[in-house]
Image 1 (cartoon, rainbow, N blue to C red):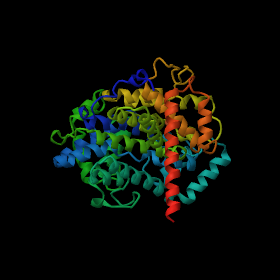
Image 2 (image 1 turned 90 degrees about the vertical axis):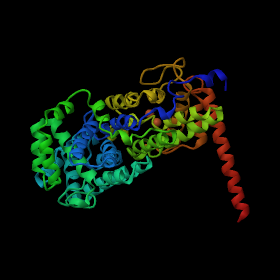
Image 3 (image 1 turned 120 degrees about the vertical axis):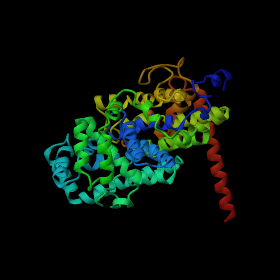
Image 4 (image 1 turned 180 degrees about the vertical axis):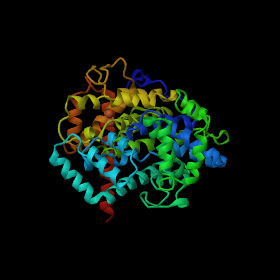
Length: 473
Ligand SMILES: [Fe+2]
Ligand SMILES: [Fe+2]
């Protein structure tokens, strides 16, 4: 490894984590959740604006408002975990399905209409009928399972990111209804977390306000008072709805800046390196949960990147940013439908174009945080090649920094050595020999050699551990 190569440093890779503010990181990354849930840009921020006003009018304590603030931004943390199943069960685009499902209230008429119009939308009549019949037979269980997966996974990820149990419980209860007919547990009234009751109300207000305006939001909320919603919260919102400035900000362009100001100042949380690692880890779990075929991918790419950097002698704080970048390199895949991600056959031209856009989406999400510019550039360039034959921009060796070269090598190694929808996993030796053909033209030689040497060390260590175990028996 030459010092010149090791010195190639992407911007942002030496920034100290504690210059960041937690609300800034969480609100930026919540854009990825909006994408996964098929929601228009800014859904989480608008829900936060609505829910925090309800919470303030309810007279919540400062610490409760702090938890509410983060719960509103992270309410959809589990949204990727049922996307593949929705796609498989309903034979449809998961983003459109999720967006449309938020506009219905689960009354029988609406459910039947929804299933008929959102199921197997591109398929022939026979597939559509088969799919509808399957859903009709198992409707209750399917809905409960989908919501249970989403809520439990979301709560688990919030705990990974060290948010308090009240935040996790809020996410867990998000789809419970005041009358006990919600999911997954059918909790009723005050047994439902207060944060969840506020967040569900805020979510429905935003969805109906975006599609039909102020009156549509208000009348939908009134219609569901006592069934979906806590009637006290609905009364409170009716009063809030008379405040023109509340709507003006909700409909304005500077909503994010206004939402930041709602986080209780006394409870503002600075982000240290450990917390930032956990947040990157949590969002990597959201990405990895999106498709069964990429389960664990981001975590493994982070591990291989770490091993390569270790071999190259990279300095510890720089390596930490590299690992965060590797964890988040595919965050843009949250914006790609599982119809494409999980397709067993060859992608058609449009599908391939959509797939090739995931680095752009990833860069768009991550660059919303100034200090993430280094990892945003990894997300943007991890499919580029030294010879300029990669995507999305076809840039070459003169622009690709060391961090990106490392993640590219780690990414390809994992893609080859793990199962994919269209082929089984390859043996390590075969994966490495395929990659070797691209070394020097597409892939960085130093990074590839470092991967080979790190894997060699790992295999030697495994073999000697196995020998020790055998001799001890
Ligand atoms: Fe990728
Ligand atoms: Fe990847």
